[in-house]
Length: 190
Image 1 (cartoon, rainbow, N blue to C red):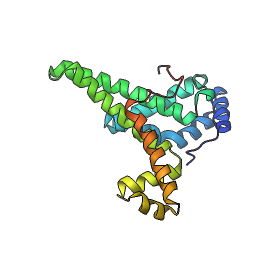
Image 2: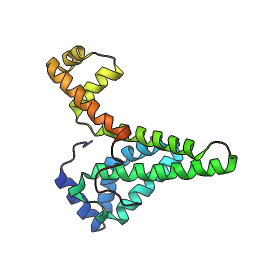
Image 3: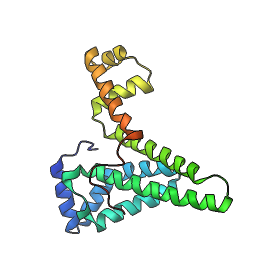
Image 4: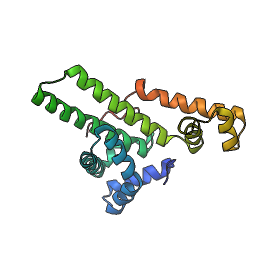
């Protein structure tokens, strides 16, 4: 799977979608459907809802290929942004309806739940978007409980390089909670 997609591929894909090439949509779907579904599921915790979001996101991309601006970021980031935005909007709708029906809870609790789900989805996206060396270092340090020396040995890099990778990975992850809501320039609704 191409995580570090070259910008040229993104522009060509956009052009193919704009021409109405169904094969382009299929290729895009094959490449990013699992990302879209997983992000939507992370927010909504519901497979059926994640399936609906996946269909909606790819439908939007098919109908609006010109909404993507390669100058603002890569296609993967745009698709992830659309997914997170749509999933958070759906979560708000579902939770607000449940709140209105039951009368239990408050608008503040609803908003906190939405913010937590959005931050978790953003963190997942950040980790999956990291270059492989950063992901590998974080995986060793946090999932496998290795210190930076063990991480360096496992990766076959110097201790300084392991510390640098861990530091950069953590800096990227720190944007999940308090960072901007999405890639710059992507403020259009679905």
